Length: 129
Image 1: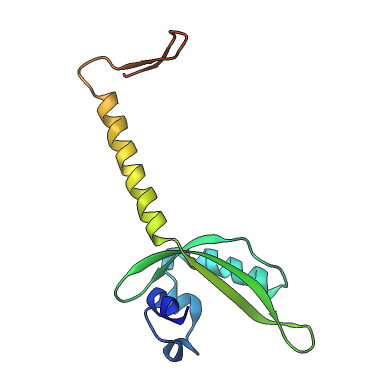
Image 2: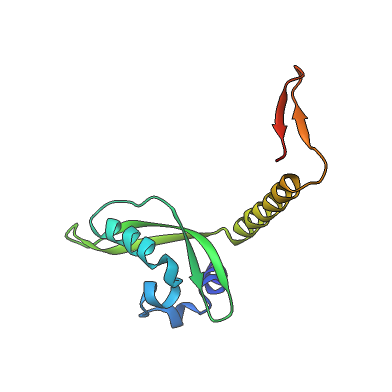
């Protein structure tokens, strides 16, 4: 698990301790989402998972982030425990599927020949423009 965290965040445990989580590890476009998740945890509530980007010097990855309140000895909230699930491969696959779908849509819309779909009852269900 430590090796995965080092891979995701681009530094060792020792290098991460004491650094500012959002500004130093989270991609700028995900700052508001992460601050919202942390704010919810700081007020005593578990957060839903949100998809955010982590940016290191060498790479960018996508994770599902959730946070839960961290309580002190007096049952007061003193911070948050965060969990990150690496979804980079899934994100890249979905991105590629979207590109392929867009390419196919453009191909069908601009085809020089009529393209159409017919259901099992013989009704036309699709027609290119």
